[in-house]
Amino acid sequence: QMQLVESGGGLVQAGDSLRLSCAASGRTFSTYALGWFRQAPGKERDFVAAIGGSGTTYYADSVKGRFTISRDNVKNTVYLQMTSLKPEDTAVYYCAARDPYSTRTLYYSKNYNYWGQGTQVTVSS
Image (cartoon, rainbow, N blue to C red; front, top):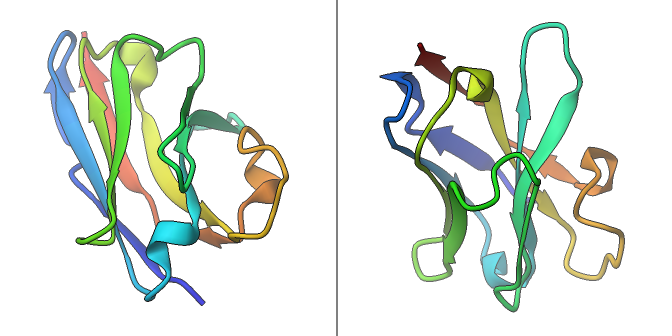
């Protein structure tokens, strides 16, 4: 079992930066792949970024070059550094963890086993 708690969301202006954090419980944090997803009102939950246990990173085209995912296996925390924020980045952001032995793609939300409660990010124009 793993519990995930996001923090760091808020209201910012276009062009600003924000860093989201997701603290995880569990002694085997380093073995889990982790992802960030977002969901805007009335839309599906979309992939944003992911990081494997080895540190390999993956990004949605819409955030590539603006967002950076990282992990601290000592603090059991995954981060999402967001820069050059745009109004279309407004959404509830969720972190998620995929079981260590899964080989399923990190791009699909259904392949993740544990989810946080989400944190709201609002970008005003």
